[in-house]
Image (cartoon, rainbow, N blue to C red):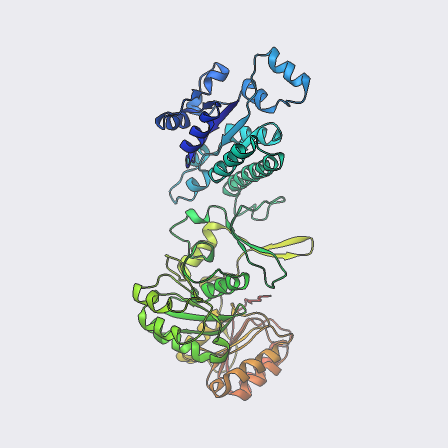
Amino acid sequence: MRAIISVANREHLDELGHALAERQVTIFATGGTAAALESAGVAVQPVSSLIQFPEILGGRVKTLHPHIYGGILARRSDPAHMRELEAHGIAPIDLVAVNLYPFIETVAREDVSLEEAQEQIDIGGVALIRAAAKNFQDVLVLVRPQDYEPVLQEWQERGEVSQETRRRLAAIAFQYTASYDTAIAEYLRSRDTDYFPEELTLPLQRIQTLRYGENPHQRAAFYRWGGLSTVKDYRPAVATAEVLHGKELSFNNLLDLDAALAAAGSFSAPTVAIIKHTNPCGLACGDTLLEAYRKAHAGDPVSAYGGIIGCNRPVEADVAQEIHQLFYEAVIAPEFTPEALAILRQKKNIRLLATHAPIDPSTLNAQIFKSGRFDIRSVSGGLLLQTADFIGEHELEYRVVTERKPTLEEMTDLMFAWKVVRHVKSNAIVLAHKLAVVGVGAGQMNRVTSVQLAVEKAGERARGAVLASDAFFPFADGVEAAAKAGVTAIIQPGGSIRDEDSIRVANQHAIAMIFTGRRHFRH
């Protein structure tokens, strides 16, 4: 038997080399791989000895030759193929272990040049993998170091590698090259002219298979964008966060954690968001994280039970002590101090996740722009893709449309509420006072009902609060309901054919109203 090995990732290479040598497999390898095998004490021959031609162009051409591809692609069951090999002095190749240049890791660097990226585009390796995978009935193809040991074990136990395993390895190989090509296309694609190309593949890596999906009868898995784990300078993300404590995360936990991260990360001041079913039931800013937590919890203590917390500052002992008093599913934060971990780990089921990166508008916005990732929704038979719901402050044109202008305190709360409402399901209404959410109306079929729910949740706290609406008021009834509850200022996109009715009602009740010209639907 004969094998070709050419790997950029040399994890477990020495184990593979020794195992093949024990099975009397003749090993051919490219330059760096051959040197690594020789240093491990494995007998190896250069690939150039197969073709009697040296590597050229700095290693760009080293395996592209009929003596290699003929040996891989020939069907052993086809007498004509085998006669042709013999006529041309070509020997079959039975195993191909190849993985590719680290293109994804290279382009993740901030300072990478186009020339450096191009040099990491593998040509011969991809061709070797595809050739071996095409002829998987006769050729074993290995692209992942984690597959070496189980394949070798099966070979040892059965005396051969089954067709089922060979086919599975071929599928892995084709997906591997497809993901690699996807990463290259994504890097080369212009974000300005080709954001939504005619044909698109998505580079995803499975993190884990989940126990179930939204409900126990649904199967689910968790994937992250390919290459995201290599990016250290803008990676506050659920998919790259480290789980420090707690039982396995569920599908719904992950959705809520993402909502908590996004909500807390919308603010620069110390902020705590408490999420329930992807909506913030409590969210507040404070001079300290402890103050922010207490204000957030006071927003809706009943709904907070069993919620998920997002913090944009490291969790210290004082905050941990407060959290420990109640039942929460999970907490995500930049870090946890050792004292905080000791307190929270007393509850065996709470999940604790650390992003090990700042959680604030600058880092989250950098992730949006540098990664170029899509917001993806599934529909029957397809997917909907859109850019993230992000609007820079310079893109908004705040316009006071009422006779009374908001006070400085109202304006501060209006800006706070406008950032919060983006994280609430439509139709969305948020009441806020002193940089804390006091009432939320979410997911209703008409806007006035959302206002009524937010007012009911706020109770007496609605008096003197401000209101944010994610979209315009189609009728003045929503403004009327807010006025009766004692709301003093409103921020909304405007744009309704009945805007003048809403402005008139606001003026009647001395409510200050601002139009933003942009909406924040979240379906």
